[in-house]
Length: 334
Image (cartoon, rainbow, N blue to C red; front, side):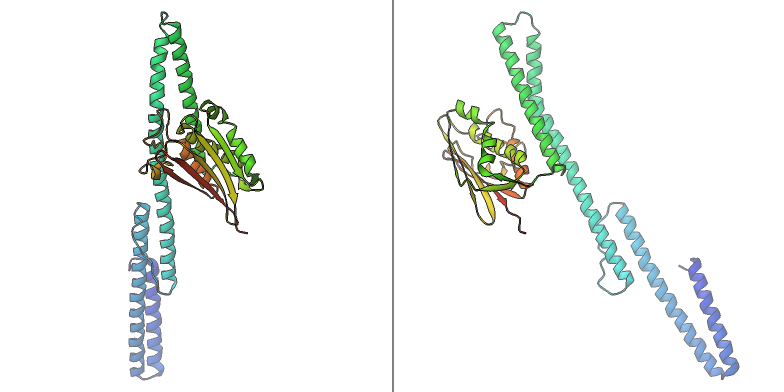
């Protein structure tokens, strides 16, 4: 600290002022008064020196703390509940440290999610791509039976459609995770929402001869983004159709109260095992009753869409008795 030029100048000025005051006092007053003044001045200089030294030591601690922050160490705590500008500075630095720590944590989580997503995508694409490579190699045989050629061509088309759906769904989830999607708040009648969702699944329902029942007051409305919410409902309905045997039934109902609007989708299918229920909205999770073609992304996409519209989705199921999805969209309090 003594090497600092400002401290040297400060001490020199204090010394000059003290000596000058002592000399002047000795000239006009008794020597005892001059001696008392000198001792008092020396004591004040000493107190000032040690106080300044303490402040510099605290500043050095802050400098050391900031250097550790730049190296990624956010574990230190320098909060100070005492009064004074130095304490305010410590608390402000601590707040900035917390903010940087949270940002670092978020970045790390994003890296983990990105790594997991790349791993999941590569795993999901590997199987259909390998299958198509094998079938393409077989199709190159000029002596291949026409029936087999037609079968392989059809299988390649199916795998391509599967890859297209998978990539499209993953891109949608990535946009939602990155907060790129701006969900609209539209007043959509419940029956319109349901009809839009059903348009994409009527054919597979007809193939399996599933009966459909829709119930609810026509005045019920949802405050949602129509297109994205339809996307969520389609994936839920596809899941219900996939797990419901021929001749089964699917029912859709909607209600409204002062707090939320609820839409319920229920099937009479195979049901979901109790141990699978906590994980069915996880990406790429496949339960025990999942079909061979399932990749475990549809319900995850539905979950992301609903949650990002301040909604909630619950599922209840029992093996052999079917599954019920309850979707709630909470109303904004004005």
